[in-house]
Image: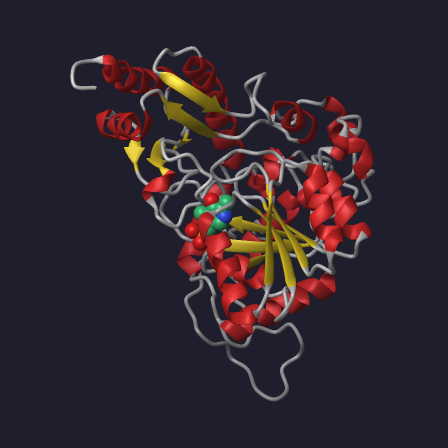
Length: 422
Ligand SMILES: *Cc1c(COP(=O)(O)O)cnc(C)c1O
């Protein structure tokens, strides 16, 4: 057993795609409804799968790790048998172990599809929305995803409907209001940390014949497995937790359905947003330690959020681990762990928020998240961030450093706000 799976019953469950989503919505669905049952036939826990999946065949003298193959083309003559490697835009052996491991973590029978960035993966998923289609998106989500949706509206006549993804009734009403091409979900959302009732949303969308795509970057497959709730598409910014070291930009799409995978595979080959072999190899190496990193950063985040909540220079703190957080109950019922992102609004508005960023010595002022190092930024410094995100919101990505060192640095920055010139 690994301690990423707090419910011992989960280890005995086979990952089942046919989850009673409605039951899960009220937290009564148990371990299975959380999606952390194990699709792996050997019944291994996700922490083990992250280490063992995608290894080369175990032969004497063979390598323990997959090789990096640098070749743009493959020897081939005559009519190539289907599935043969031909040309590196269509497929390379370096992608295979990564795609297998991520699929195993997400509980997908089909291999994942790696893309050159999270946005390339998101662009592929959004190709499900036709010209003149209708797309329901969270009003708070990764800002470039929302920018992409706006671009679809401008250039392809797509009707984009923004909803509060935590307001289940509002989302259900939006997907029922008119024929809809796709429901896009982030949970928890970037950067507001709203938690969606994912099984309820999937059930309602499917009842209206609407496919569902989930950006699972924040939760990671260790936190939730949307395919187990019936979601049609999962996308990742592999750049973040999966790779985990802020040294690669990479993305992935994971689906349960073979025909849908073929469609996205054709999309990738056609559009050519493919990943380089080094990046994919590095990302797989990062994934080997995913469970350890997530476990540590989540524990750090929960402790820091708890301390922030009691600090006099803090106006608001959001982390689903906090008992009075609006997402707490749902995250407890639906997720394994609460993630490692904290929303922080210091007392004193934008000036105070910027002063905190400037005063920190250990935390890195930088965009992005999910690395081993703790970082933060004020999101509204980007003009493109949603106007309903508070101007003074700091998004903290908590890393794996010693929690006392992190707190000492943060507390000193907050304590400094009260001083002269504040
Ligand atoms: C960073 C991020 C993306 C975009 O991924 P890239 O790898 O930067 O292209 C998408 N969704 C979420 C939730 C992210 O945090």
